[in-house]
Length: 293
Image (cartoon, rainbow, N blue to C red; front, top):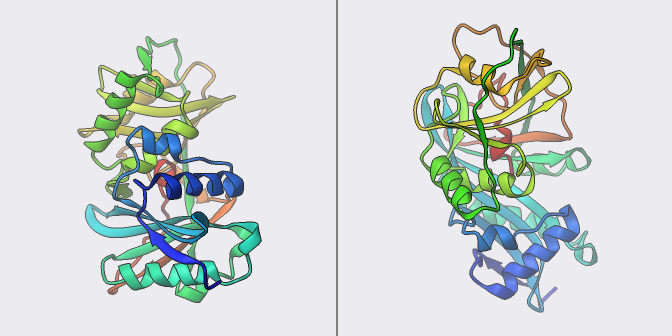
């Protein structure tokens, strides 16, 4: 244990960064090297790690972003990539790293939060985090005739499309004034590379990027990226097809004159939130999937 040393924010250190990516692949099956090489690893993503013989063996990462809550911006910090190499588990390393994060950022944010697997639900309350139940939003929707969809599929592996997506999302407005994240383009690009590379489209007439997929009769809408206020119904009409009967919003919609329903969301992970300075975390919201670390 005495040979462990603490390192943070080492994205430009090839040895530590590649070791970090190897550990994340071992624990979660995800890698960060392409994410770094394509320029998406910004100063808003900060790993706090313990290193043993130049290998990252434990980590708690910080994502610095903002919340938009009822139109008001709040400073937020999302914790992610909490992991320890199997050979170094049960030594309290995650606890020490969590305490380092809290010591550095408690005075700088309004909220800290994270999404945790259900097998570690007793860990985060020790640091003052509380569980919050998300809600999922959905509506019935159908088109009665075939539409001229005019969708251009974007290819994240194409340099021109990649730059177009990154510039667009870096200058977006929040997807919802009720509740959404802001300054989270780095996480969006991670999803674009690793989760939804086949589901990103551009609608030229509306000037929006839409991330969606159709699953049988249900349209899953993961994000709408826009630089201006939008009308949602023309977009839904263009991205749905004749089989669509239902739309699920994987964020908190704030559209007027639509009959949108909600119900408690049951997922594989649980939302934990720690609040500061008398802030209140809102109820009946869905954290945007495309900015969930």
